[in-house]
Structure formats: structure tokens, C-alpha cells
Length: 197
Image 1 (cartoon, rainbow, N blue to C red):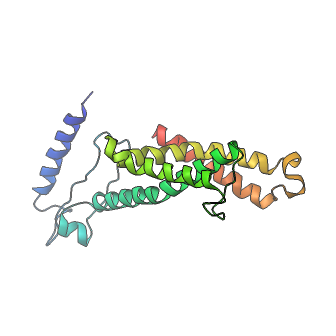
Image 2 (cartoon, helix red, strand yellow; image 1 turned 180 degrees about the vertical axis):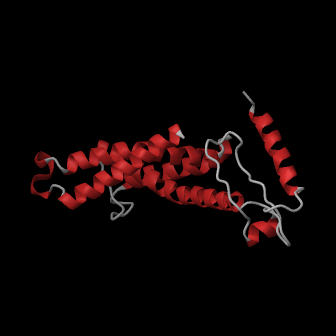
Image 3 (cartoon, rainbow, N blue to C red; image 1 turned 90 degrees about the horizontal axis):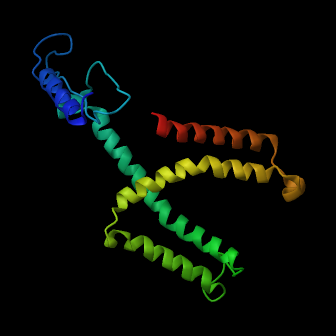
């Protein structure tokens, strides 16, 4: 069994051979062969036939830069959502648990505990980098946690939304159930796939 370093060394050697290629079907006037990039332990590999204009000029695969940009965009999206969502969620949860007045529609004087919890939660989030926790890693694992727990929460919501004792005559319509269970199925497959692939 090859180690990750051994695999990377072998891939680098193949990349050097590709870069040194002269002639052949993959090389023509103004065309530079482009070796792949990525994790040598990856279980899925994409193989292309010829580099496009940008890949040819930069001598890097499209997925190399594109994957980096998409990953960065995902992390930024999570971060923009994480602080207000987590701060708001903790405020609502603790306020309802303690029967305090809550809601963003109320002023600070009308719901002081609600807003104090939100302020504290936001400060804790801002202090994370100062105590030595890598914020990018924290955001990444938060995103993974959201993805894994989403199917469970969706299923629980669908169960409540179809319970006549709770919802009375306002239970889910067939279309809402179809869309809800479709979302549940897709999220469950994605969550399982994240650990299997």
C-alpha cells in the first residue's frame, strides 16, 4: 500500500513526463499538456482530453483554480450565514426555554435577554480566532455538521407538519410533502455520500 507522499511523488513524476511530452496526439502547435492537481488519496478522478485556452496559458487544470474559488465561495457563504443564524437561533431557543420575550420585531427594552444572548453569541463567534481556533476549519466543520443534521431536522419538521393533533386543518398539502420528502431524500443521500465517497 502506497503512502500519500509516495502517491504524490508518483503523480509529480507523471506530471513532469506530461510536461516534457513532445509531439503525439495531446500536443500540437501552441498546446501545452496540463497535468492534474488535487488530493492523491481522492477516490474519484476526472480525466480530460485537452486543455482549454486558460488552462493552456496557465498550465494548470481548470478544476485546480475553479475548485479553490468554489471552496472559498462556500466558506464565505457559510460564514455570512453562520454568525447571524447561530446567534439568532441561540437567542430564540434560550428565550423560549426561559419564557422570555423574544423577537427581532421587539426593541432592546422590550426583550433585553433576547438581545443580550445575541450580543454574547456574536462576541463568542468573533473571539474564536483569538483563542487559537482556526476559523476556516471551524466553518468547514460547521458546514459539515449542518449537512449531516439537515435531513434529521427536515424529517422532524415534516412529521410535525403532517400531525393533525398539532397542526389541525393546516397540515401539509401533497405538493409540500412531495417537495419536503424530495429535499429530505436528496440531503440524506448527500450526507451519506460525504462519508462513503
